[in-house]
Image 1 (cartoon, rainbow, N blue to C red):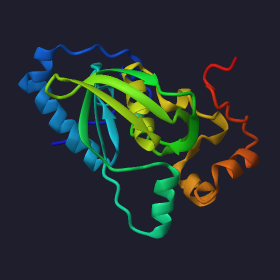
Image 2 (spheres, rainbow, N blue to C red):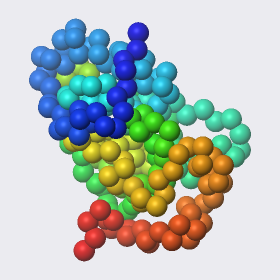
Image 3 (cartoon, rainbow, N blue to C red):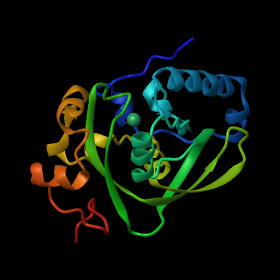
Image 4 (cartoon, protein in one colour):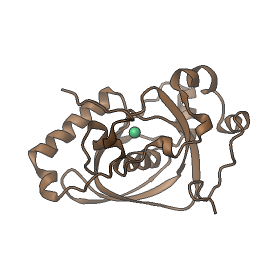
Length: 207
Ligand code: ZN
């Protein structure tokens, strides 16, 4: 059984999700939801899925990035993105903080903005305090692609989509990305699209 993934336009994607109590987390209802979200994310396929994306305004997201390396090229791309294997896990009631002020830019997409992609600046390192699926407190220190996934999913719990943070000039459908842009470096894309320089400190709050 699969859950339906809602698309941009559905108001639930703009709501602030509510935290869960430990009792709720351990309830059969939430435990079953986690399993359904795991399967739904896996089949989409995606590397993260937040509860609002399946229509539920609660502070819960599932994450799994099973990186398969097929070729030297793939290895190079994975290394550039600092993309490493992340086993399946659940984050509940997360609080996120940036670890340092280093920002990195890559294209990302979202299962709720299907068919599109854009370049988004994200913190390279983050620290997340949250509960796991057993209601236990967990601290996650992440960098690279995993840090990006965490920022993207936690944004969902606060009604924020990547399109709120993207370089708008890089917004494109995935077919166009594959046809024209996928082999360009981030620097080349910057030049071609005349993008503002990345403020290493925080492009979201320029001072
Ligand atoms: Zn998303």
